[in-house]
Image (cartoon, rainbow, N blue to C red; front, side, top):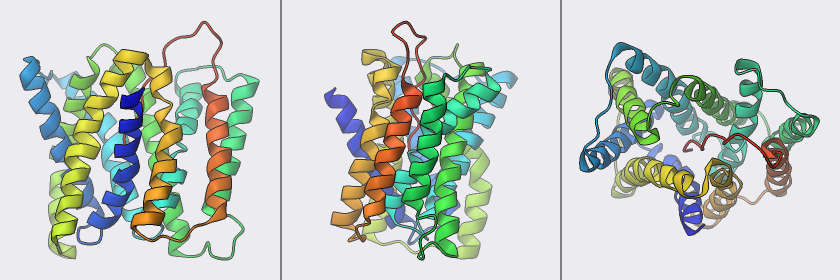
Length: 295
């Protein structure tokens, strides 16, 4: 379980790294850099294990779909969203990922939702709405767009999970992850280069350190650690990291970035976590669930 807390710590801090890196890089450049660095780490691991990534046409198509839904779109949305809302709020809203995964699995995989899971989805939606400040006077303009970006990032992860469960279950997890990140780096590079030329790049030692930590630690090392945790304790227990990440991110945002404390973050976060717990509730005899994606 110690590895689980280490992973939550890494991914909780990732929201801070996104915030800092985004001050000097365009959202697509933040996304591309972390994807490329993460792919480098995973390739190094595979090289040490003497494994290879399949590059047949079907595999490349699967990698492309998963990386667009699970890396390119959500990583870009998170980087853009954090330009408009706090890293703490982003983390709480992005915790909606398991809710979207359950919903899309019910639609795309014809998985039946039990009453407790339906109630969990409803409770999770209420929690996200409370955390985002729906009905509050400060939810205006760019803050609304930023909140939606974080929520849609969670939806992207959900789509990727369902697609992976349908098409990539026969691949060793770390092989599939390496293929998806490498493909994402290739696909996003032209867009990241163009936006960097148009929007400019402003680097400082702190921003460079943040993007390096985000890519190497928050993406590459975290992926490896996540798969090892799943292998050790199973995917269902590994998914507990989902409950811990927002707590770490909120504390880090308040203490390190001096972000304002909002009581609704606690209330909305608690409701969202309760909803996730209900959605993840399974009978004693159950089929293993998938792991989790990085923030």
